[in-house]
Image (tube, rainbow, N blue to C red; front, side, top):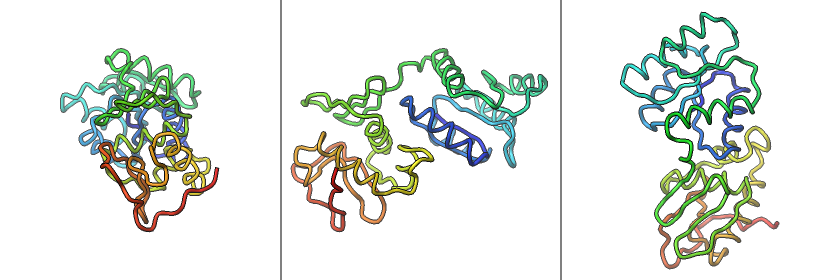
Length: 240
């Protein structure tokens, strides 16, 4: 799912509300970035602000539709102007929401649009022998018992698993997991990684799945080798 808004306070709040419900969320602050992300990532839904610098939300929606893309678009505006609503719907938007709005209303509109598009149950993340269930916050690994995850643990694994083995910077992980809260506290992240390894690694002292990338962040290994040594320079696990 893609959230597009140039408001530096509202964008992370909307994105975090959606992440808490188990959705994988990408963010963009300009129309140009939104179009590039739609092309490269093919999101299931776009939450699109009307007032954007450069290419506005109406034009972004038009260009998405011009390419034959039927991705659901929920448009946001601070104005309750009927003309804006008509313009947005004429541009190809599927629904319209006026700011300010409650997270509950946003989530209800998102669920309705995903349901109409046939994505209402597309909330499982898979990578090789691993599956994450967003409804139950459960990790399934072939041949092993299901692992119940906390919401924080789930959001961490959701982000890493969906990167296909690529390293993710600690700053991005902090934002995805905690939103605007604790966004500069790497110690929280170390503690979370430590607790999660206790649940999912056969030997937490030599992790094979949740791996640190020195100087960068972490990555998920979906097909671990028989033995993986601790990456050089990795910090020792933080105490619980």
